Length: 528
Image (cartoon, rainbow, N blue to C red):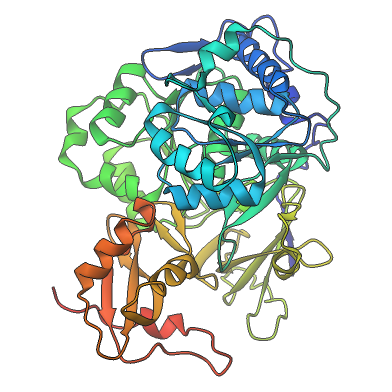
């Protein structure tokens, strides 16, 4: 059965992301606060002017329409200026996690063919090494704050150059190129058009009641599609105020909610656990919070109820993935008939269906009850164009008639609400971050003592899941679990680090050579 959204269809604006968000400002909007970090305040008028000036400076440096510009920075007002400046120049922004190692940065810079690289002074050691590996020069690196030998944001804005004339076709022009592992495998560039992002902004706006007087917490990284489009772009589209925090620190997070009177919280399940259990929460006045939305990984009903018991507010849960720009489902506000343990109803203009993973046949609806489990497929204007330079992965993910395989195993309830019960995809979700097992396995196999390796998700109360490695040692080789963990620590971003190691005689595999991760996930963890 094909399920359609219970929301009325929405009209998708015809403009590009910049035009729909900053090109539509009214005189009344100009003096509203668009972004604050608790110290610096940036009005909508100033954000637009600075984004335009940054676009002019990029054009003067040779950035043409369709070029890719990398942006790696924590959540700050400067990130927002650079993001919209890149789009205003007609370029595509590829965002990088600030935690990435030089090797990870270099791979993305090279694969995306970035022509320039915007970052911060704190990240420069990794940035310089990665840029060299990708064929960029020091002159191609722009620093948002200040660093000797590099142009900084203030210098470029001070040139006061006009933004270039560009002609953007929203349905085909790429706005963003975030990297995702999809359902399996290594990270791939997800081609998101201006229409993809604009469509998901208005789809999300139909279900989320962000208003101009809302102060929206922005601690989840803008480099991730959830932070970029659902938090940053949707908030600015609705003329709310983004309250940014550059790094997750619980006292700073709670203090910012209290001092700025934050009304809207976007979080991931690991942060929900902290809000439920940490005694520090009681020391702060969080009464301004009226709405909490959690996404990036499923959260069960018990945790949701515990969160509301400690932090009374409305609570909704959402489902999404980078390839969906990112959200497709959200729990309806004010509808108690839909369990908070579900990821909600389909957004406007979205269809979905559930298929049996063995037969591929559609799972039938069960009137008044929950369906059998199957993989969810989604179709709508927010579905990505495809994976950059990877037609094979694109064809494996999107069917010829536009259905995107999510890799999530779901059941559908009596109100057409969706419950995520398992997943077909292999990604590990560590504190909301995607960790592809294949990437860690490829790294482990370069270790001289390792003959074979497999990595799976292991449940963890604080992080949600952690990477757990199963290792087969070379004959005669010796290594401890701590040796392996320390070796990977030096070569990978912190959120991808292996947290557990088991030594086994052989990695279980199918006749076709595929790792049987389900067998490994069911292996009892060794006693500490």
